[in-house]
Image (cartoon, rainbow, N blue to C red; front, side, top):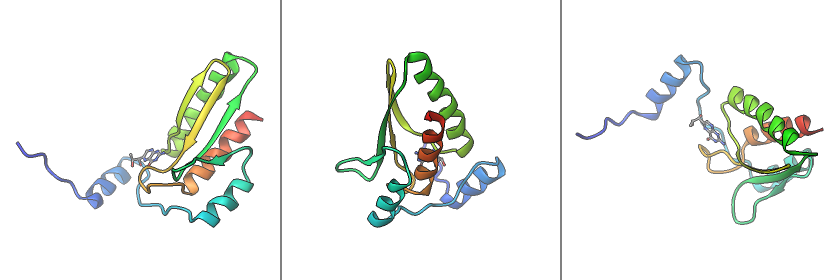
Length: 119
Ligand code: HBI
């Protein structure tokens, strides 16, 4: 049974009806990305990929997981999610906008929110 193809527009209308974000965002160009990084704390570009990364180190696992919990709530509210891993007191984060195939303003916004949580 062939799966029914739903146009992006229909998907978007559906998401809007459910109060979820939709609409395409544009990737930042290299200069925009570099400029945005100067406003963040300790984020760098990922070699060979249109993404940014930062590794956060906390006092212990409890603090690291608390950071992830708070960051997860922000990500869910933004409908924009990190690629991340946790080993004991460190949290390694990579941000990129899958829908756009690279770094967008959404990633910068989430990175700034994470920086604020980690201060
Ligand atoms: N998170 N990092 C990231 N990139 C996305 O494109 C993305 C997301 N979270 C949800 C989301 N897109 C939805 O809008 C759907 O497009 C999956």
